[in-house]
Image 1 (cartoon, helix red, strand yellow):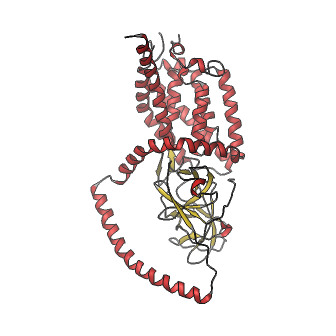
Image 2 (cartoon, each protein chain N blue to C red; image 1 turned 90 degrees about the vertical axis):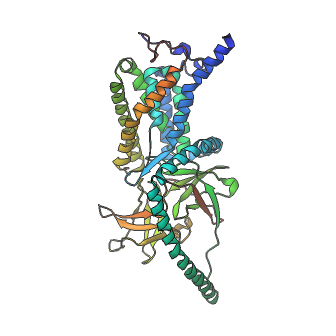
Image 3 (tube, rainbow over the protein chains, first blue to last red; image 1 turned 180 degrees about the vertical axis):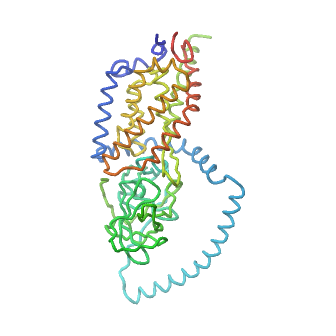
Length: 285
Length: 177
């Protein structure tokens, strides 16, 4: 015999559709969910306003609750042993030495570039502005690779703007609320980024595959891209600015050309949104 | 104890399971990642819905499960309605079998959860594959099922503790023998 569950439920009186536990109401809500699911899958823009309103309103709570969780995860993953920290420290010191040398070279090249451009009267790319913002939620789930950031339209964020981390390209803005925005990561199955191999200027499309390594597609049959080649954005389509660092090429077990991203999209705390002054409104397929 | 104090205590006790569900809801949005599988989530909310569907379905009315699923989808970027569909479906089939499940040993209930977890994830995988026209690799899906199944006993213990503080229970499982 069933227990006295219902009598102990002080909220039972506000249950909609009868007591809210019967199979009749279950089928109604099941059908409603299915309907919403189909609409959302084929016309995601229908729920865009609701989605961003929810994000705007729930984000402060999420930010508060996520803080300790993020700290724990970061602590566990990054500081497992003292030896690891020591090794990281040594590696960073060596890197720093090299970077100092490169800094001097970069300064020299910058001034040389400026003077050469002045001589040739080249029309320069527009100067971009950056909005640095905190990541609110993690890098999505099994099927949807996106993340929420704590800046929105009020901060100058617009649809289609590219998002980068300190290391490289992360994704682009697909939904914008007043105080929050959603970034579609380059790892998402819906993501397509026009890229090029820096050395050979070979163009390709980088397609997300819902794992950590997007795939290069639409390559000519005779193309020979060496593993380890650097990939940057090509600027085609004007969504992603030209020259953003993306990652390096490697070949997987099946012979596909994949990209090892510079940015670790699973451990982002801050991102920079590239504001080119244009608003590229792109519908998510 | 006065009547109002009793009422307040009852109300506070009644809030505990909902606070646990809220916590699991937030944890559900945090994702794990590995170089092999990419990002994936632990099905915390599915565990909670399964547990309460077995032991006390009146605590999670269908409309409540629906709202939880919709808000989860809105926040996580999934197609709206996907989580609510899965959660309501799980609630429907588990509630139907609850008399059987509630009288079983814990390992049997655990196996029941693994079964439900496989069905829920298989449905999502199939749905996304059909919609996108591309199939997500099986590894992240297996990671969700594996990790969710492994973590269920611990979650079940937490949910059991929140169950124990509920007022007006005749025994641990809300089932009068």
